[in-house]
Image (tube, rainbow over all chains, first blue to last red; front, top):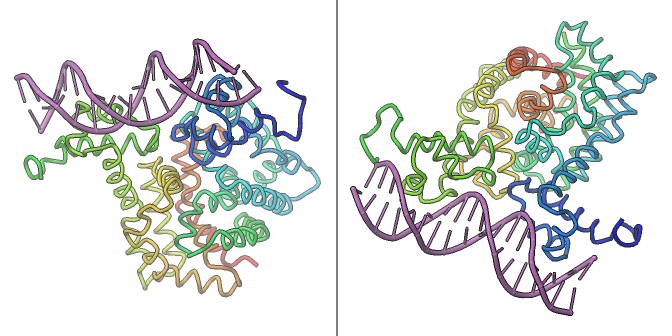
Length: 205
Length: 205
DNA sequence: GTCTATATACGGATAGAC
DNA sequence: GTCTATCCGTATATAGAC
């Protein structure tokens, strides 16, 4: 839109966005300084405002893209009528753990900023319906009916088992004396384990 | 130390600390303003510096107290040689869920600020040893040995099942169309459920 | 101890040259 | 489009009166 159509996404605008994503996601809106972002992008501070007008506007873009990044690809898995709960859980766990290994700060960022702004665009993109009306949620409801519990419990449990270790990684790594690589290996193991655990949970007597 | 020994903790110093706890815990260090804290405490801004010298010093105190608040009372449960894994899990879940209902912002605060400052005083107080050398962790190790998995998985799972819903409450309440009271009721249900689930997890085949 | 007024620093944003 | 220099609001911190 600005210069040449696209190089390989190394236009100035893209460099700023990528730098903003890194800094905002690591530090959150309030702690991030536009000067940090400019430095990270290797450009001058004034350019940031030239391209994005304000810190807040830039943040909104990053926030939206981060939420997108978080839910992208989930839809097909959740909607698939041909897979059972265990297979869906396995696929979700595997995909999300891979994504979170690459973007470990993403969940804490989203959860923090969502809490700071509960009126956020949570449902500009229909996350609620994406989940609530999926084949996946129907299967959770079926399992929950047998156990006479609220299906939200199972939803929370699965999300918790996948996401929480990344949110708490500094604490986990401290307690377990783990290096970065050890932690990642542990997360890799969970890909298979989580589906097994969730199955055990919904069948627990 | 300053005025009379203690009234009922409504000395000015205590009022400021309590206000600081509320504001810091809700908004995090960077987004919190000393003016907010002064207003919340119903005192003048200058008094804050009179008592605590700086925002950062005040924050350090609150951070330490919050971590204390998070682990207080866990020690006896974790160390108890006379209870099994299921009973311990039940007690932990029950106590933590009660505490988190009263302090819902506590975990996200701790996890966020811990990530921002990984070199934090995580182990001024021996959290690591408190857990790693407890009867509880030994029982986790025994269970993990049977299943041939790292015992840290079980530790993460239990913590995740207890804490994560509070960290993600805005999202959960949105997806489930829950009001505050509904959410709390759901958390109350989990007190009994989590121990059952954890038992199912460590026995999953 | 508590207030008002103010100094000082920092961060977001813009003006204007190139 | 990109830079340097600068403005200006806001937030922390302090001086000094009471």
